[in-house]
Amino acid sequence: MFLTEEHKERIYEGVRRMVIWDEPRADVFHRLEVNGIPQAEAQQMYDKARAERMSMIRSDSIRKTALGLGLLLVAFALLFGFSAGMGIVIRPVLGLGGAAAVFGIWFFCKGLFYFLFAHAKSGSLADDN
Image 1 (cartoon, rainbow, N blue to C red):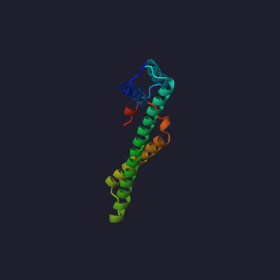
Image 2: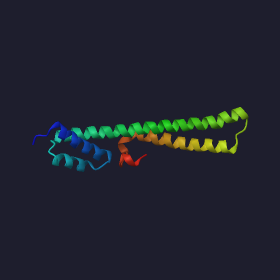
Image 3: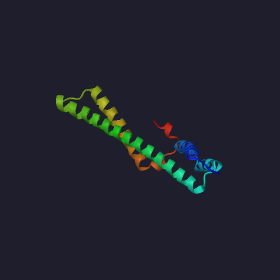
Image 4: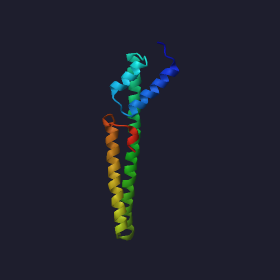
């Protein structure tokens, strides 16, 4: 069976969707086999889609890490900047600084973990926002 490049591209888009949704590897290869893709080419398509998934996870984790660092910077500025300027820290500023610090640490750690262990993330990428 001869497949045109356009047909292969449509098949790849389906495979890419399946990989991004984290469907089982066997299901992806079954879809490729049913569509007449040779085993070597199927492995290349799967590897390319998997690399795209890792890239998407890592770019999202960099964004989360940067957000965490930004929140930590806000917390630092609120707590130390306000107290240095006035010599006192009022409760609302302490609360905002503390909340920013907690969320900053959370986003920073989560982003760093997913950057380092992108291969371990399971489930659809659309579910993690």
